[in-house]
Length: 535
Image (tube, rainbow, N blue to C red; front, side, top):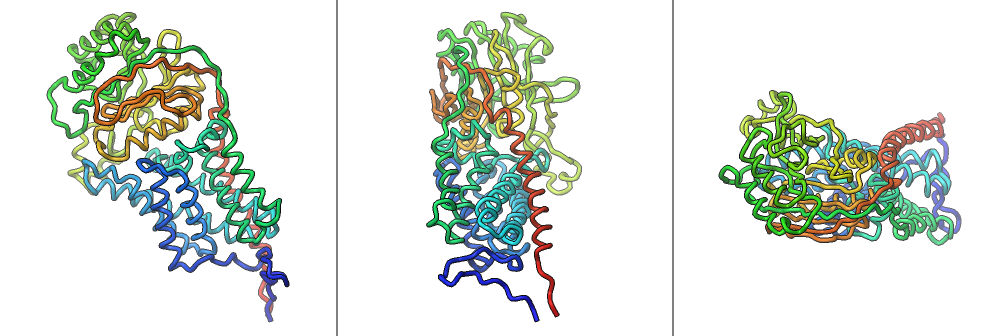
């Protein structure tokens, strides 16, 4: 004799809470869940630039969650693998532009596999929460909250590991051009991801439980949706203006570009022409020059000439050597205060915090040389990780910095703004990804950072697209890809810290550990409520 489970419907046919001894039924068989996961991957990719159709992110999230309901652990792995491999394969296809399929395949497999593993907790949440908290609060609040925390925590983990992680595919970034972007100034990217997943999951549960006709249950997803749409950006305090000239040289700055000595600097210098008589306070060049100006007299002389003619310091970037290490270094070249040929210690510098694994250095080089000696051999030098403050001071204005992919790391941005940065400058070299979505995806992150911090962002690329972005995320001015030119604008300076800067990293930590802790607690309660078999 066995215990008889409570019916799933009342006498009027209305769905009832899942009884404690029953697992949530799958919405669809696994054979259907796998193509649904594939559709979710395609839709999620469409939410990112170049297409950038932001509503697709909500549809993709909903499809993936539906495919996970009622799944076993291995079923969840299968669903997660289909989604993760296809999504990352599409999203980072720009890695094949010059290096071919091997790096793309490796990155796709690593991120896709980690995604598959990271999705298991979501399936467990669908299994355990209805047992642990079978009422409306459990189904409409606790379950969506736990799913949102676990999803966000997975993004946090992938953004930190392995080798520093790749926080490129965060759900919140899809909203860079949506009406919801202002929310990021309050809760950061991780917080926006959490709210998006919570809203979708709550809507699904409201429909699944048949409570969508009732005011209170239907209000849960409705309120979060209204909050996402209607909450204005957190206001920061105006602190004056700075006239900036940012230059996109469109020179031969790619790894495999054919060039003569000085070609990159000359391309940048030629494009700087309109800036020289524009009475700017700061000239900005993108990431990368031909040589280390602190060890190359002709380049030092060239930079001094540009700065002197512009009557303003030049913020540039090059690979430099210090203490026996090579760094990807941004530096403020100001001969008016340091002389024409300054030593490195006389100049304000910032070294890139997160060099790109297998792009700027090879971790565990001996091991990977055994696997792919030809590819590893292409990278002859390893950049060291910087540890200094990502900021320089121009006159009396603190300017925050992020070099290329450092823009995707929350702590780099928060560190400079917390230290007082009133303007943000992002220098990047996208020449190795010409004609792909990579630069547009990175530009979306820059737009998110402007709103998140309440700061103007000067995002300048070697080959484009480059933009100066207002604190509200709108574009002040810009240059298209593949065109040499200069952006000259009076940029708003801002002071004060947004809630996102203050709590953003805390949100990431809480969602990661809170999600895992909540899942463990839910699992323990669910197991205690499972009735023993009766002989």
